[in-house]
Image (cartoon, rainbow, N blue to C red):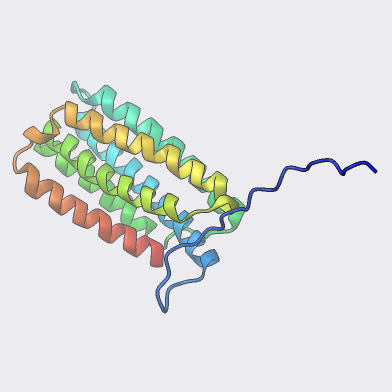
Length: 195
């Protein structure tokens, strides 16, 4: 009698399990909210860099800002594609983020190059935390989405680090400025997820 061939046991897949409390959305709705908020965030980031470049486009900061804008445009294109493929509607707040993102970028740039860099530090720090939380919730059933989020998180943290090296901490009122921008970014994340 011949023994049956050894088969490799299938590795159990870890499903996506967004943290849930009573009243929280189910997993499918939570994934939809992730895609919506990430698309909105990348759109807002694009507008921030466009606002900064409108003011600092001829300064020594222009090459850094242009490179960051190009990456945000790539991120946005990817989340636009994911949203379209999954049938996820964009946030209804997109017109607000269109104006607010540009205004934040232009206002911080008007203070100076260091304030523009401080803005990037604050926003990208919050986005790095946000993407890390999302990645931890995604299982093997959402491996592609998790890989996208992880890759974009690395880019966002790189933007933060470049901005720190470019003088962000020299901005007037750095601690107050970054705290306010972080609070605004967290609010924008919460609103874009829900609305």
